[in-house]
Amino acid sequence: MKNGIISYSGGLDSTVLLYLFREKIRMAVSFQYGSRHSEQELKCAKYHCEKLGIEHRIIALDFEKWGLKSSLLGNEDIPDGHYEDESMRSTVVPFRNGIMLSICAAIAESEKLDEIYLANHLGDHAIYPDCREEFSSAMSKAIEYGTYQKIRVMTPFVYMSKRDVALRGKSFDIDLAKTWSCYKGQKIHCGTCGTCVERKEALSGFDTTEYLR
Amino acid sequence: MKNGIISYSGGLDSTVLLYLFREKIRMAVSFQYGSRHSEQELKCAKYHCEKLGIEHRIIALDFEKWGLKSSLLGNEDIPDGHYEDESMRSTVVPFRNGIMLSICAAIAESEKLDEIYLANHLGDHAIYPDCREEFSSAMSKAIEYGTYQKIRVMTPFVYMSKRDVALRGKSFDIDLAKTWSCYKGQKIHCGTCGTCVERKEALSGFDTTEYLR
Image 1 (spheres, rainbow over the protein chains, first blue to last red):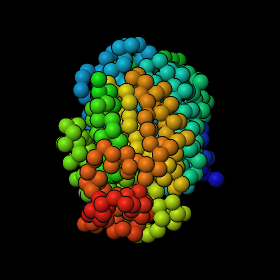
Image 2: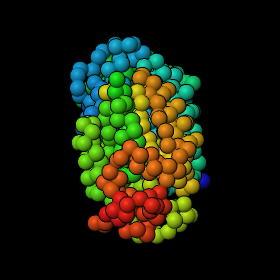
Image 3: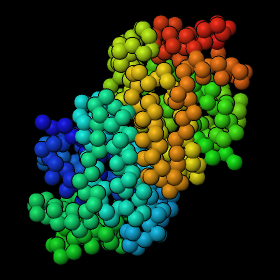
Image 4: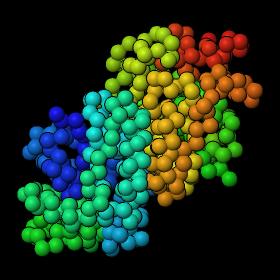
């Protein structure tokens, strides 16, 4: 019985999660919130949902119009550096996972689903407070209490490194070249922004076409 | 120092809350999510924010397009009856307070505010799971963990009845006639839908112009 919904960006982590739990996931929800790399992410997300025959719903949110501040929304330059550096803080989109999980909860309640999958992992924890275990478990409680379906948030990668996630994906033969990470949203991955550096570390030793596309 | 933001509908409860904490609240956020009574609510919300000189931000959300199901969104008729009746369940908008609080949290983080005010009260608890104390306190934890500002949710009415809230408003001389409750969104309050019945009970003994407008 498929009883799950996934918050699905089309990035490496959520794509691996989508494949691992494909037997449980009935719907994938992607958010178009005005980030620079939205188009490339969505293309990847669509590809995998079609391949797996999973319903794909796209939700448009105008974060900039709401007044949210982040370099991901085009207010300032994307910094280069390591994903866990303090300089990456400008790339935080305030409480993004809270907003996305809440919307997934509302859709799940409407569709009678009771599990939300989220691909937060260890590497996210340093800079992104809404990726930490303490956040996702409190959010799971809030959603469980706040819905008739008693919906919960499932975070299978919360104590795994991105490297571990990538290796898991590799062993399942997922086409990781068809995932998008780079924050800058150019035609190919820039290779120098925080999320590119993290992607390269995670895919070190893999066929380079998998991160250099 | 004003460090607060309020999720503000323009209804009776959140209007009383706005006045009681006017010294703390820097911004009011109203959500236009496609309910039938949105126009009347917003008119009231604007009136009080202007009167108090509080910044008013309006966020448009297309709940129906997202696939959320509720009679408030125009999928079916609004039932008449008592607010706490099981028949009112069709008026639940799935996880609405979760979505609104998450967006308030994101705005608060961007504006360096650290308190979110929510006017959930005892009468909401029967039918609306995302109004109960267990929900709002778990949500407060999730928001505290998920933000740099360690933002919290303040729910001063969570153990008060709507009658108590109305009496509080009366003693502060708030113009309650300029608040909107009715779900049906006609020109005047219908007087028979769940929230009208609840409003009349709460305002019993008050000048009738305060609920019959």
